[in-house]
Length: 295
Length: 320
Picture 1 (cartoon, helix red, strand yellow):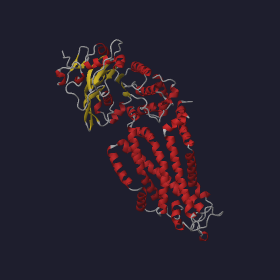
Picture 2 (spheres, chains in turn green, cyan):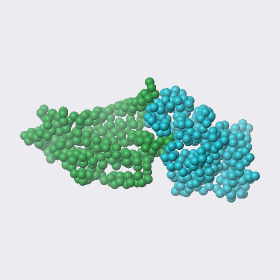
Picture 3 (tube, helix red, strand yellow):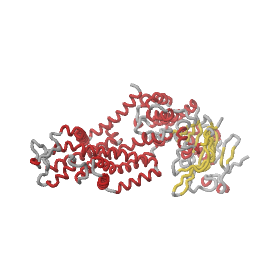
């Protein structure tokens, strides 16, 4: 076995160890399964939908669940199951990707802010303070109002409204890591600022970011559906989950299935994200890992 | 012998809200090629600040107020961050006190050493792993091929210190600064590390600045010893002179507090190190000095050089 293999093997062993801890948390494991299924549906949704999610037939309006329509039909007679399957890419896919985008930008800004300090820090933090001052949903609504309704403004709204948390989180962790001796040692080796920042600081601040990310994705789904509910999300007739609830709410008491099923899917997804977040927090914590190693 | 490092009247102050801490206050010394130069002092005597100043790692609130640090004749105090990067790890390197915290927990030991080669030689990290094994062997890490792929938490304290030493010597630097390299280790491992440094000094022909609070240790390995007290130099002399005829009362006190003799009780120096914000006037040691005279509390002692080249700052000695 060559040296390179050995180093790679050591890295793999470490990841395997984290995976074992994650797996030992049954809830997190189930959550991950749900999320993987959601992700798959986001991609192949339109191909597995039993019916055309856009085809309406007023004669079937508000039909309760039946063999023909497993989750019933909505107020325009569209198949709810198909709409949920196709809508996954709007609510789930879009929120996840937007949060990842927002978190990446936020992490980068937090890194610069914490490591560089000085004017960089002041400017980034003050702008961030302004963004943080608005409640997330309000900020998202304002951004959609400003950018106009559409998929791109939904992405920007979620990304921008989720970014400030990461700027703060990463900056705080960086300030802590910067004083670590191994960063001084890296400087002493004559490494460049960039490689210190990316290789030595970033990996050591990633754990809280990953945990936050999984909780945040759940939150983003809530924001996306809330915007959809308010009619500010993906424009109709796209089957976005929040919009489905929004348009069906008038019939909440007479035909609850129109609202209940998309609501259930939203809840399950958010809970799954939270369970995965808990699992991640455990598996990324070296103390917990050491404990498991001993068992 | 030529001087590899000359420090002239170096002053490093920490500007704190409570006042200005004069951590290093007018320190001058020289380090010769290939020697082990020991710096001894209590905690708070400014020895670690001195080490940071020589490596350009001072961070606010520490501030280099005045003085020159000549490394091979070039003044390091005028260096830009880029220039520093080109000599750090390559021409001047450092071994740190606590080996457990100076290795990044997310990378293997081999990777972190290879990174040094990458920074100074260019190329891909993975191509340097062979050199890393070579250097690990040199610092006597058992089973180096396996240790290259070990994470810091899988290594013992002594082993980690060896990894850090391997980083320090990897590029065969001219000057190695060892800041309390053995203080965090077990006594048996201390001896091994000291032996290793001694051996490396001979094979690499590097100078080593060995900083410690343990004067007894220095009298075993250092060629010359500088004793610091409250940010100032007290005495600089070769090892024999420090052992057989320490001049400054403080050095004598230190020697008496470490000399082992069954019949005589160990003597401690009374009192503790003074505040560096408002240090005593005159000689900073005078409130604790058993031989203090009136003038000690008024004038700062001048630099007195003896026939052997030893330096002492004390009113007991007048220049010839």
